[in-house]
Image (cartoon, rainbow, N blue to C red; front, side, top):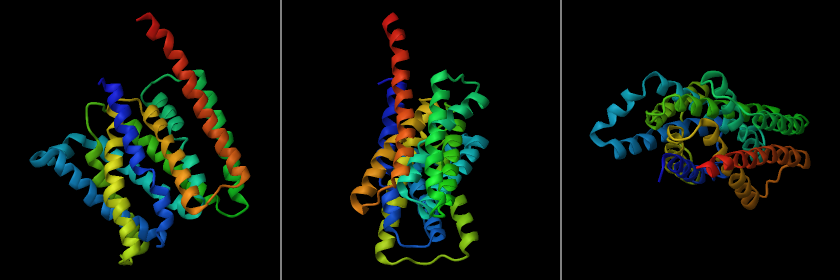
Amino acid sequence: MDNHQKGLLLTALGVLVIAPDALILRLISLPAEQVVLWRGLLNIIGFLLIVLLRYKSQWWRAYLTCGRAGIGCALLFSLSTIGFILGNHFTKAANVLVILATAPLIAALLSRFFLQERLPLRTWLAIGGCMAGISLIVLDDLGSGSWLGSAFALLAALGLAGNFTLAHSQPHIDMSPMLALSGIITAALAFGWSGTLALPDAANLGWLVLLCLVLLPIGFTLIQQGPQYLPSAEVSLLLLLETVFGTLLVWLFLSEAPSAQGLWGGAIVLSALLLKSLLDKQKSKPRLCRR
C-alpha cells in the first residue's frame, strides 16, 4: 500500500466513525455550553488514551515533536468543534453538514495562499457553485432566525480547513496527539461560558461517553493523520462522506428533513463538488497512460 492509498484509507475510516456525530448531538438534551464542556473534557481523556496506546513510554515525545504548528492545529480544531456543536444547536443538522462540506474548497484556497499550491480552473468553478448553494441555505435560515447556526457551521468549516492545511505543511509530523490539547482549550472556553459543570442524567451521559470518549477520539485521530499523506483539500473532500451518511442518519432516525430551499442549496454544493471530483479523475488519466 503506497502513501496515497494509506492516507485515503485512514481518512475514510475516520470519517465513517464520526458520521453519527450530528445524530447523537440531536439525542443529547443538554444546554449547548454543557455539551461543549463535556465534549472537551471527555475528548481530553479519549485522545490521551489513544496517544498512550500508540506511543507508550514515549508519549511525551509525540507532543514535543509537534511544536508550534501542533498548537495551531489544536486551536483550529477547537474552533471547528465549537462551531459544529453550536451550528447544530441553532440550525438543522442537514444544513450544518452541507456547509461543512465546503471545507475542501476553503482548504484549497488556504493551500494556494500559504503553501503556494496552484489551483486549476475547475476548483475555482467549484468554489463558485458551493458559494451559490451556501447562499440559498443561509437565506433559508434567515426567515426562521437560525442564520446564526449557519454562521457557526461556516466557522467550523474554516477551522477544519485551516487545521488540515497547517498539518499538511508539516507532513513528516503526526499532529493527532495535539487533539488532546484541543480538548483542554474547548473545555476551558466552555467552562468560562457556563461557569459550572452539571452532571447529566444517565441517558445523556451515555450518549456523551459514546460520542466524545469513543467515536470522536478514534475518528479524528485517523483523520488527523490524513494530511501526512494527502493534500489538505483531498482530506477535506473525504469529509463529504460525513455529509452524506450524517444527513441520512438524522433523516432516518429523527425524520428531520431540510426545507425545499435548503435541499436545493445542498444539491448545488454537492453537485459542484462531485463534478470537480470527476474532472480531477479525468485529468489524471493521461498521466497514468504515459506510464
